[in-house]
Image (cartoon, rainbow, N blue to C red; front, side):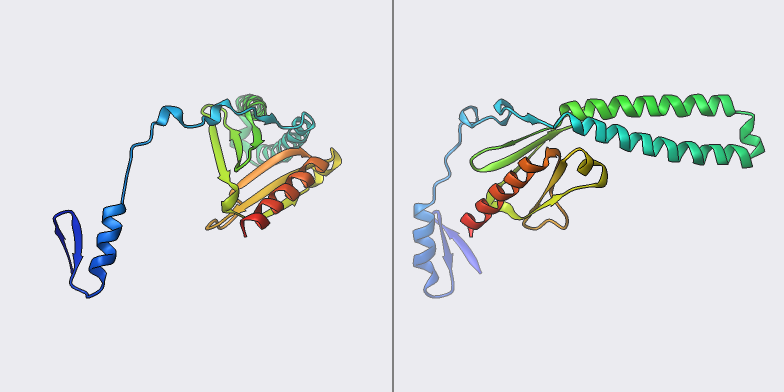
Length: 194
């Protein structure tokens, strides 16, 4: 049971009174001037490698072919849908056109930066999201090469932090050699923290 008395926390347990008084007497909680804090917006982000756009286009093309086959089969086996074949085909093409435009906008807006104490990743189409991961939270780093990105000599860095169930940050579209250097940098930072 605890009581407040003249600004000090008093405990009925013996021996705690002096420790708590010392803590309360030395406690300060000053205001921070937020205008003097460093701004992440001023960071120069490195854009994803231009070849990664080809990876995204190939992924879209594969998805388009699979979706086209599925839609064709659905139209072939469903007589009712055949009546609306022109409308369905037009909607399908418009959908993939918009998907390609949004994919391009997403590609252009993505970027990453490595600073002295943290890594930043920026993404978004309609709104911009910036993820900041301090090095002291990084637990594990993995380098992933997919089938299509490997053809373009690209890799993806997966950064796992404390308390996360999966990778907390994935940075795609990095040249493989640079990705290996980044992985070594992050592993070095992890070892320093231990």
